[in-house]
Image (cartoon, rainbow, N blue to C red; front, top):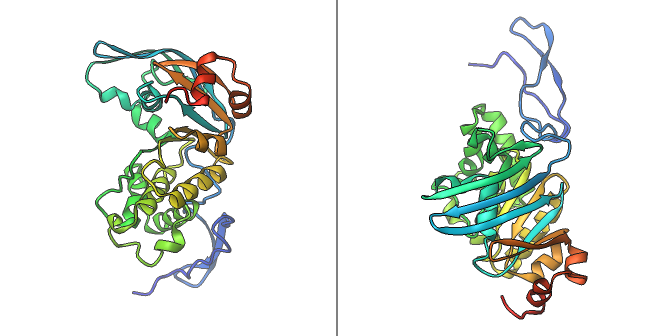
Length: 298
């Protein structure tokens, strides 16, 4: 059956018209509003300042005191690198920011985590809404057992987006943002597991971006990748900080030196020192920080 409406021609994806002219079933020229996704319109994030403020945060898991009286601020639209030796609580801190520690048996959390002024620990905030604001990229890529297209569209469908044209626009836009579109545009319906490890990690990044988070949380996101793929992810993060606040756990000091704007140094569950990358790396104030940066321990 022939459609009653003519095909819509968009100029470019980032500059979509709010209305378009077409004809109805009896040949009358009418204007219709576009109800499709526009990449320049963020349906989750607030275009104001995005900031995380942590105050007096303590995390106990069974009898272990993992995070001890953590106080810090995650700045807006910067790359914040969390550094420190293995087992110091970096990953636990990252997961607490989007409440992934809630499902851990025997966990007890006290203190405050304010996301744009909202306390996500004590306010009874819906966890799904919190996690939608914070895209998490894990140490090893974990594509879902479905096609490349469906991986990116998965979160959007969960949040109620069903329109096929809208989903196609979202998938293309965020595969482009993750630097993957040109590599996969001709095989979107193939299983995601057929991609290389580096491509899978970029796919996971696109999947996180597709639900429009305010923050990107990256837990050693390049540790399982080859040097070329690692460099690609780093370059993507540097570009993405124009629109997102990025919090990255890394064991590689060289990586933090290359891309960090802000640094948090942790040791034994405590925040030892925070500040701009230039200050922490060039003029550390705490003796422990100086020893860690000199390679005295790792």
